[in-house]
Length: 130
View 1 (cartoon, one colour):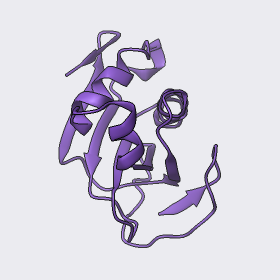
View 2 (tube, one colour):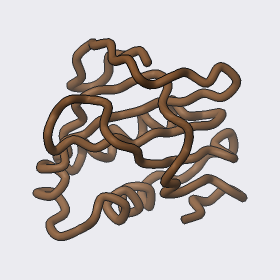
View 3 (cartoon, one colour):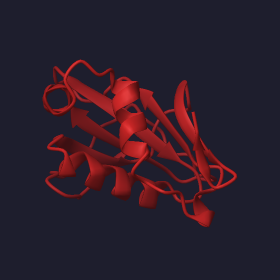
């Protein structure tokens, strides 16, 4: 998996993830402490759903997935979200913007990610389906 620069994000290379060449996949790692401060007492999945409520899917997002996975970084209190589908990069960019707007620190952005395990939401019929 290759790290890519993004807002408040440094360059890095992390092995252990693999790219899916047929489907665009992007991952982001964020700080759980800043997330807990922004949304006290709210689980990561519910926090992400609240952020998704502010992101209105565009037609080319259809079929996109958002899921969580263990953080690839050797860093305490970090969590990883993965976007996958035809507009994975755009969805990731908008999600990063929503997180930063609420003071959630995004640590790293990556191209690629693991296969879906714990799906949080998908875009179907122009809406986020939970």
